[in-house]
Length: 348
Image 1 (cartoon, one colour):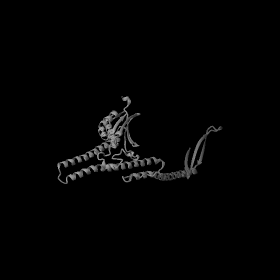
Image 2 (spheres, one colour; image 1 turned 120 degrees about the vertical axis):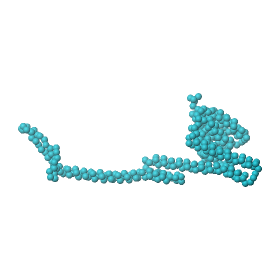
Image 3 (cartoon, helix red, strand yellow; image 1 turned 135 degrees about the horizontal axis):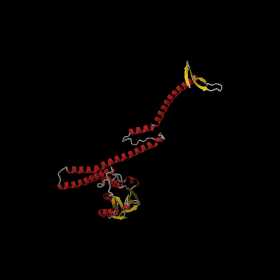
Image 4 (cartoon, one colour; image 1 turned 45 degrees about the horizontal axis):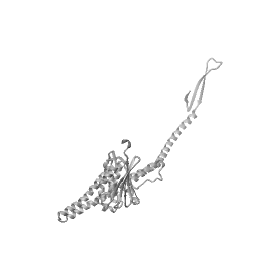
């Protein structure tokens, strides 16, 4: 089969040999067809296809751009909010009304992150104000005492009394700074407890020997019930229980009893310190372990020996041991409960 052009016409032809019964030699048959109209149709169709594809490509690109612009509008809004984020605009949230389903998880996570940042920033701001407040009082006392004593010549006894007074404020400053340094190390994961078997009852009884002198002054009794061995650091646990006992002694009425109860709870050991006295309102319980937090704001100025870091340090020490700490206050009794990992039985 072959094709050829003659003038303005196009032809397609073929040939074949045909054997006839009465002929010795085969005959050659030729067949030709005028395909001019068909070729014109194919050429026209080719041009229409090219134009159609070009138009389709342009329309598809435009529709794709519109769809992408509409679909990415929430992402642009997230970007805008993130770019405008500052300490004063942490309350902003991305509305969920116009967010497509595919981006709901992203926007929800972003809003949750903003909520956490807002809470952390608020706590940091309050914490900075509390630090300034706690440091201001002893420094102001030091300055006032020194200015008064220097107004005129005084007897050596007056200077000695002023130095003793200044020493109390200096000790308070030192206590606040030590507590803050410890909490800063704890926040950065630098407080790593040792792992050894600690019998909690022996720790409590040893602390009772120290606190019994303070308890005798007000007729307070100390008692411990139960046994339990934990996997922890002796020095840290001693400080933890000491802070809880000191806190209990401070708020226990005279001639009452402070009870320490130790009991196993599965793979944990529970230690509770219970003392009678004025209860703690429910709204204060979640913030008891915040730094510088006090239930009664009026105690800020009077409690010169307590900076409000004891319970925050307790929580940091318990967290370092992979434990938990909480407080329950009702019916005139307040109980602090810590749970620590028990010493594994297979290590006996």
